[in-house]
Every structure is written in C-alpha cells, then in structure tokens.
Length: 242
Ligand code: C5P
Image (cartoon, rainbow, N blue to C red):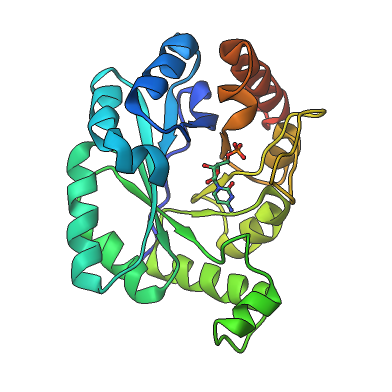
C-alpha cells in the first residue's frame, strides 16, 4: 500500500493530549470542565473506557474536542476490523493497536474512509529483552521495535506510539509525514511517578514527536489549566518555525 502523508495538527493545542486516567465519567467531567478551552485533545484508556468512557468520548466529540481511544487492540483480523469500524463511527481521532502486521492491516481496513488515525504500539515500554525472551521472542527490544516500525510503515500506518527517548530513532525509521505520539512526558522538575524513560515536553518535540500525552502532571495538578498552558508554551517554543 502506498503511504499517504498525514496532515499536521492545525490547532496548536492539539500537540498536547491529556490522559483522562480516571475511574469515573463524573471525575473526568470535572477535570474537563476545569481545563475549559485550554485543552482540545483527550486520551481515554482502559480505566475510563470500561467505566462508561465511550459514551463520554461521544460527548467530548460533540463538544468539539478530539479523542484518542487507547485500547491497544489485538485479535483476529475480522474482530479488529469490525471493532475499529465501530470506534471510527464514534468520531474518535486516534486509536491504538499492537503492531502485529495482521492487526495493523485489519485496523487500516476497518477504519475505511473515516478520519480515524491508527497508531501502532511497537513493544510496550514495560517490556525489556528478558520479558520478550520469556514471551518466546528470539529478538531483543531494539530489533523488534525496528522491525515493527518498518512493517507499520510498509502497511501505511498513520502513526506510532513510543517513549520520547525512542522518538528520534523511530522518526528516522518511519520517515516524515506520519504521527509520533509520546507518553512519558514530564515538565522539568515534575515527579516522574512510575515513568522511567521520561523527557521534557521540549525534548520530546525536538526528538520528532507530534503529540505528547500527559496525564498526572496536569490532571493531578492543583491548577490543571495552568499546568496544561505551561506544557503548551514549552511545546510552542520547541516546535520548528513553519
Ligand atoms: O500520568 P502519565 O502522564 O504518566 O500518563 C501517561 C499515559 O500514557 C497513561 O495513560 C499511560 O497509560 C500511557 N502510556 C504510557 N507509556 C506507554 C504507553 C502508554 O505511559 N508506553
């Protein structure tokens, strides 16, 4: 399949995606209300998604927000294609799948002509070489990531999710025109929590990331809108001039 160049984010706010890792729609609504017009893009993962979050995603989209569904799909091709088609109908902007060739092909088929962009997760950042060996793989993490990025590119995937510390390598393998989305972003001085391979927003952007996923440094801040604006200012200062 011939790769199709993706349009860059046109709303500068879209470079920041806030992770709504929250246990209920009620708590998510409160965070979104506090963030107001500062944030345009939200990520919904397992926790909120399985607690009514898909209905909430519909509301966010109806209110003009963009939504990233982080469900990391992987199943037989038929199931993936139909699941992706349902998420495309929801009006989501991004959806993650694991970077297995069959799964990526099925996801690209399932999204049809919708604007949904499929992001592939190459190797989970919680996996090291020993974990891959335990799972029966013969290759190490670096080799597996490189192989899967090449396969994703060949299949025409819309983007890759990776650690900010891997973004420059992934950009080199992926080429321009496809999205790189990085979690593990921490403003300088912010607590890292359980994230190990972290970078600041400026470092992530300079490494080639297009969208940064930030959760706790914004959601758990006493002033979430101010925290979001600080990250956006750092992103804006690091972006190359247009
Ligand atoms: O709160 P924090 O900023 O660490 O949230 C990061 C978000 O990105 C979480 O939703 C987490 O599940 C997700 N993520 C990650 N590391 C990965 C892939 C996804 O932290 N490798």
